[in-house]
Amino acid sequence: MKDKNQQILLEKYSNLTGGGGDEKEIRDQIYKDIKNYVSEIKIDPLGNLKGVQLKENKNSYILLTAHMDEVSLIVEKVDSNGLISFKAIGGFVEKILPGTNVFIGKDKIPGVIGLKSYHIMSQAEREKAPDIKSLFIDVGASSDKEASVKPGDMIYFNSKFFIQNDHYFGKAFDDRAGCTAITEILKDNSSKVSIAFSYNVQEEVGLRGGAVCAWEPENIIFNLNLEGTTCSDRELEKENSPSTELGKGPAITIMDRTSIVNRKLLDFVIDIAEKNKIPYQFKQTVTGGTDAGYIHITKEGIPSITISVPVRYIHSPWGIINKNDYENYLKLAKLIVNNSHLFIS
Image (spheres, rainbow, N blue to C red):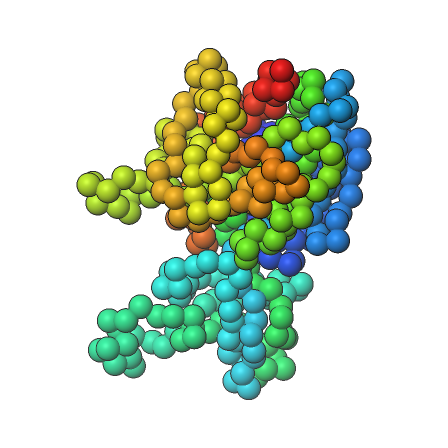
């Protein structure tokens, strides 16, 4: 039954919206899910959902972090013919966007991302990957007034979670997987050490929530940052090492462009995984960054480690994660928290 509950939580969080600066829908749901399990909870001025869960040891805290925001789009302008120009919020490979089903604004007006028809393209245009400037969204409107959207409205992929062949398909696993992990920990936590938590905003546009999330409480011993990360096991030639691979367990980041893991904390996490026979892998690439990049240099420095579930086709309308990877990801995160007093001693 617990596995079913975890699956439902991931589905719920994946299907909700929350682009950079527009995290209210996912934040409101998380607030409802955790409010009865924590000692303090608040929304900080930037929008992070933060709080503490007090335990036997009230003098030391571990900090759990994940980000609520997903890669998304925003309306730039609406032309007189009803077609909508847009910009990206977060990083995309723009050529994947044509033909994608989206919805726009608070009324969730459906539309499709289009571009010039193949039949009227020049040969040069056909051979060139489209950029975002050449794309538009069509909502079936013949004028800007009929379109019923305006500049600044958020645009989200209309991708609904489903399960197939022991894999989860959906959007925003980066980082709704991390959000579900924190929620599961707060609901079922036997740690002796108090927990501080922060579900962060605006990670995808510059780690902004992470930059302000770790200034309180005092005495944060370490940060466990929970993420979704690149899985490139299908796209690369055999002679290249994939970033991560599905089915080989959660991924531990040793280094990326924003941080290098604290070695004592790395050894602690590896020891927990091996003693409990949890499969794990190391993220092989050093591109990208996470909120740990700012957290580890907050105040006098906070030892930080990022554990991720591998996600195929990350930063796109659809991602795929392996069921066993996700379950081992949750298991490892809970064991790190429940054994955190050993790191302190």
